[in-house]
Image (cartoon, rainbow, N blue to C red):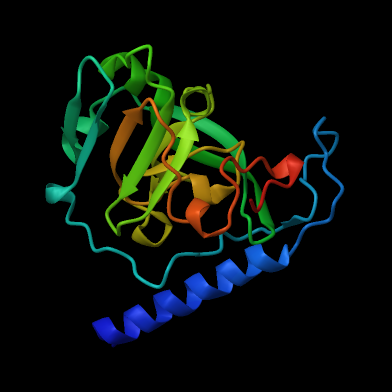
Amino acid sequence: MTDENDEGRIKDKLIRSKQDWAKEGRLLTGMPDERHANRLPPGQKEVKNWPVLDLGVQPNIVPQAWRLTVGGLVGNPMVWTLEEFMALPQEEFLSDIHCVTQWSRYDNHWRGVSARHLMELVKPKPEARHAVFHSYDGYTTNVKREMFEAPNVLLASAWEGKPLGRDHGGPVRVVIPDWYFWKSAKWVTRIELAQDDSPGFWEVRGYHNEGDPWKEERYS
């Protein structure tokens, strides 16, 4: 069993390691594939498993206490319990995922609520140009509004026919397949729509503000 000091040291070590990657430009090939000629983005390797990557701490979220808040520049801010979220229209999605640490996994079967449906419910104001995701572990990341509203973006509660596990961001995580997977926040609890951009946890630590795998937008 690890105590809080051990968890803190693990987290700090992992953060320093990832920041060093950004400084060194690790994994960059210099051969972008902007036309998506290949299914596998440059510098990536296909895996069959789903590696678990986090900062060394996985929040223990009691399902009854989970809440999702969507607010900011919206006309109809909303808060859902997990039961209420699961009562929203659930859709099936199929997508590849690409991690900035060089692995990619094909044909992931998801079930969840589409981001477009959430946006229809909260009614973003015209000046809302960015979305910021906040997680239960304090993690944040940012995307442009149009990326969050893409047709393949969802808030996933199931993967491969089973409830999404805690290690992969359950009970609910963001899934943005077209960007590197650090943009797909685990353990999401709040989504804020804003006029101004607000770079998140990795974006202020040397990582790209967008994260297109085919352009190799790993680092800033």
